[in-house]
Amino acid sequence: MLPAEAALLAGAAFAAGVLNAIAGGGSFLTFPALVFCGVPPISANATSALAVSPGYFGSTLGFRSELNAMPRQRLWREGLIASLGGVAGALLLLITPGKLFSGLVPWLLLFATLMFALGPWLLKRLGQGQDLARWRTPGLLLVAIYGGYFNGGLGILLMALYLLTGESDLHRVNALKNLNSLVLSWLSVAAFVLAGAIAWEPGLLMMAAATAGGFAGARLAKRMSVAWVRGVVIATGLVMSALFYARG
Image 1 (cartoon, one colour):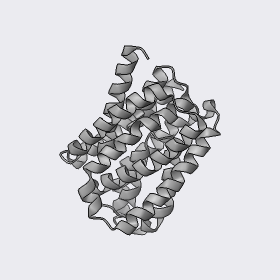
Image 2 (image 1 turned 90 degrees about the vertical axis):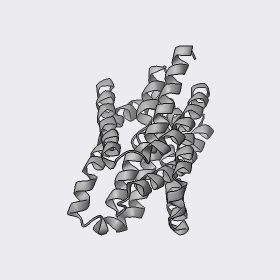
Image 3 (image 1 turned 45 degrees about the vertical axis):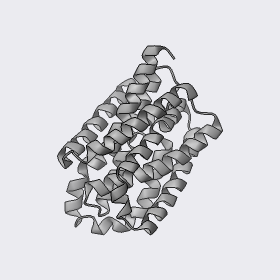
Image 4 (image 1 turned 135 degrees about the horizontal axis):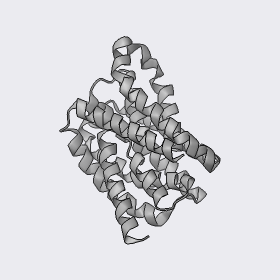
């Protein structure tokens, strides 16, 4: 890597770690940065998943008090579901042609952004999520498959899922989002490593930067208002959807 490329990738990874801890969508930054530096799309996606995965660990630690207050059985059950979905999504990515994958990216990001933006309205219409609570488990499996396939927008979809299925406290939602993102990302990354899809030099640099960003972002998230958190998610999702569409 050239020094300018290393600086770009490290900066994108740190910012992605912060964004993932606050609202999700960090791969909106790491994936295009890798593509800009010449990494092919499939490898860029796999390397991006590697880069942001340690950031989930840092941000999960930042929400440990919220996680400690939740039932252990539920956390283990949802972690297992996220694990299965993450591996399935990673295997699906590895058999997808690069051109087809590039064409799907903006639509996946736009879908995730719209779901998060419409979450409060849907909650009011459906009795604060009570009618959708039974869809929490199958919904988590589908989102985990998506996350293993393409990490961009994973946090947005997880937050939308938890808001739509009855979680009303944004800090609890963030804690669950970070924990399950951590579990499914690490297992999907393991599949990418075994398949030889990782670009290791930029990936290791970005891992370190994203870890620092994730821990910093978890502290910042607790100080931000709900309106600001939602604004960051929606604005990032819309901008990156448009950029990927224009590029493709």
